[in-house]
Length: 441
Image (cartoon, rainbow, N blue to C red):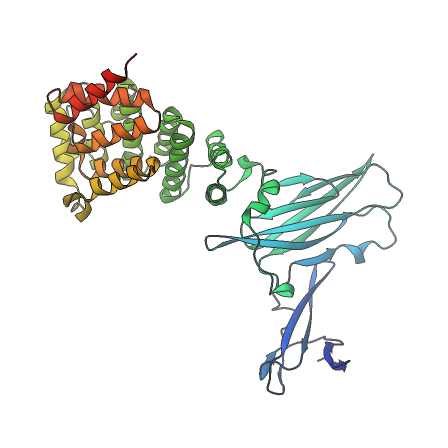
C-alpha cells in the first residue's frame, strides 16, 4: 500500500494505491477522515487520521468506499477543449423529518471560456430539473442519482453526466441537521407532478410539519392530474387518499374534492375489493352526509354490482355502512337500521374505547381544547366502529357541535335535517333542530 507520514504532529495520507489492510496503531483516540475524489467518474478514496484513535483502523478500499458528498466532475476530460460541460457539487446541509433525512445539495457549473450567453440545464436524476449556472436542490431520499448537466451557447452544446451520492457526508460527519423550514424556498421549485408517489407522500408530511398545508395540498393534488395511482400498493393509495382528503376538508372545506380523491382511489385499487369498498364508502359518506348528493352516491354503490335488493350479508362491511347512510339520508329508518346492525355484527370485536364510552369522553376533551379537526376525525372513527350511532346518537350531536364551532353552517344544518328525518322525536334531533332554528335569520 502507499505510505503514511507525519507532518507537524499530524498524520497525513501521502499516497494510497491499494487499501485493503488493517493497521495496528497505538492505543488512544484517533480521528479518521475520509475524502472522495471523482476523476472521470471513477471512484477513488484518500483516508487520513490524527493521533491517537482506536486500537485498530480499517483503511477502506476504493472499490468498497462509500463516497462523500462533494466532488468535481469532468475536469480531467477537458483535454484542451474550451466548450465542456463541467460541474462541481457539494452537500450543503441535511434536515431530519421524523426519522427521515433529506439533503440539500449545491451544484455549480464551470462557465466555458469566451462564452457570454450560456444556458445551463440540470437534471437531478429524481425527476426534477432546474436552469442556472449555480443551483440548489433538495433530495428527499438517499441513493445514487444520475445527474446531467447540459449547456448551450448558440449552436454549440455539451453534456456531462455523473453519479451523485446522496446520503450522510462522511467528510463532515459532525454536522448537525438544520431546520426543515430552511428548505422551503428550494422545495418550492419542485415540479410536484413529476414526484414518485412515495416521495410525494413524504413531501406532504414535511409540509404539514412546517405548517404549510397549502403546499401539502398542491403536492397531493398533482397526483390527480395523471395516472400515477395505478399499480401502486393499496396501502400507499390509502395513505395518499386519507392525508389529502383530510387536508382538503380541514383547510379548504372542500368535501367535493375530498370525495373525488376517494373515488379516484377506488378506481386505482379495483382489483382489491376490500380496499375498493373502503374508498367507495368514504366517498359515499362525503357525498351523502356533507354534500346531499344521494343519487350520485347511489351510482357509486350500484357500480360495483351490489344493488340494495341483494342480500346485505354479501356486502363488505364498509358498503353496509354506506348503504345505511344512503337510507338514513332518505329517511328510511328501517333500512338504515338493518344495514347498520349487520355492519356492527360483521365487525371484529369493537375496541374497548367504543364499549366504555371512551369515544365520547375523548371527543368532549378535544372540544374543550378547541381541537376541532381532531374531534371530527375521532367522531368519524367512532361512527365506523358503531354505525348505529349515526341514527341520532350522541356522536351526531357532537359532530353538529364541531361543524358549528368550525363555522361550517351548511354542514351543521344538513346534519340536523338528516337526523330530524330519521329520528324526529330523538333528544339530539330536537336539540339540533332548536339550535338551527335559533340561529336562523
